[in-house]
Image 1 (tube, one colour):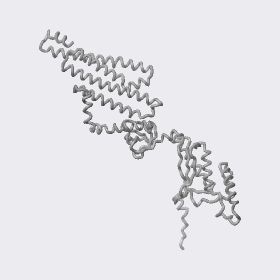
Image 2: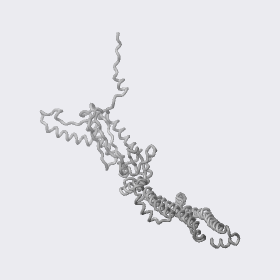
Image 3: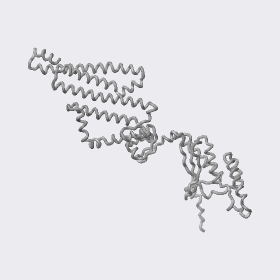
Length: 417
């Protein structure tokens, strides 16, 4: 076409015919590109978006956010410009520049369109029960990085007029530089694969990593970082590879188990520990949780004491029931009958080593819920009851003296005559 225009223009002006024909062809090419841009972006794309919104508004919103059709339209424009340059322009430097630019344009928007498709796939997989908990963002970022490197090599080879294989063969000498530049993405990719393959962490997991001050829910897993929203609503960013090289605690297994552990102790005053007399035993036996224990224990103790001769019938040789042992039996029975304590998990009440702060009695059990607020309420209710019931066993809680204790011990000052 350019040759035909050149022949026609030479009839009017021989000197500027070459330049005029070239400018005219370029004007036609860019005019067609502008008209095509208007048709695609102002007429076609709005109709497609409207048609999709009538079918499913979520899909329409997703496609608009990811700009899939917009990038596809730009790709078509590049293809059309490239075809026009090959068909309408004569062979020469101008045609080469225009076709190279159009092909580079197509590669760039082809890559962006691939990114949009990947983002849509990631969104679909996140809504899937099978893939929703996988670190999809890191996986797709790895694919995007690989695609970007590949397209980048193709664009460079296109601009310098060399085969991509020549550039790829030259990358071997740059391995050390590439490893340094892409150190974090490479380590993040390896860590992401290990995290995914071993199901070590997923979106929504409760992660605790004191080294980085992280204690909260995982909200994002990317190629190089993991974001954790802490319970105080701050966000901690952790390098992905640190989850492989360092230790962390994932509470998700606790959530799935259906039970959350109560492990708390109360310190008793050792001076309040004693044997129970007949009256105290009769009072405690009225508690339906203790009646079976007291009957069995009394029978066992009476059988043992009966084997002793009369000369050995002293408290040093005889067995008896203590208030602390009976208290432990009561608390264990109380936990086993508590409606909010998990019956299929460990329930234990035990003594720890005595200290200067008294004798610790540890309650070890699991609630039948893992919801934080409910768990704390159940734990508080249990210990409220335990603290309130202690006087029934003649036991006292050990605590350091307070100002009121000191004032109560103050002796009246005698007035000197």
